Length: 144
Image 1 (spheres, rainbow, N blue to C red):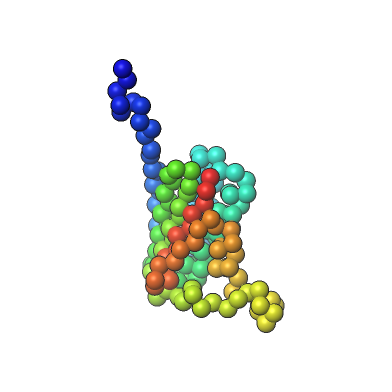
Image 2: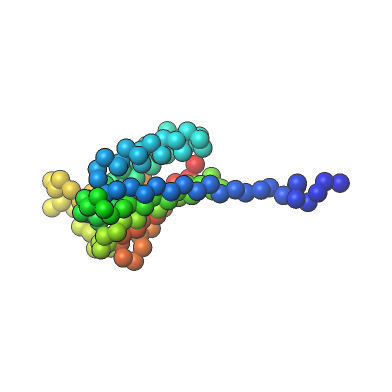
């Protein structure tokens, strides 16, 4: 008779963390982590593209808008891989923003604007997108 422990399916969670200085060059380190995780967990091409697009957007926003390009301030990226999903949490040291009352980038008066589409795009590409109340942290989940 097999031990009940051997019969039970063991679920594991893998965790990764990056602390990035708030300079645009830090994005390369994040992209390297995205690629390494995609390779290790056999992430499909579409999901990989969505992760790369979303994480570039939120990390750039954290660096530029959140931390105001202050290299002494950090952007913290945490990654949790569990049960066929990857959850990325990106946090900056800024004051946050009002993510609820953003202008609709698809409205006629906003179509010509050069910015203001990032949050809209992230919400469309991630399987789940959740901001903290302050607006200086976003959690993005992707099914793999």
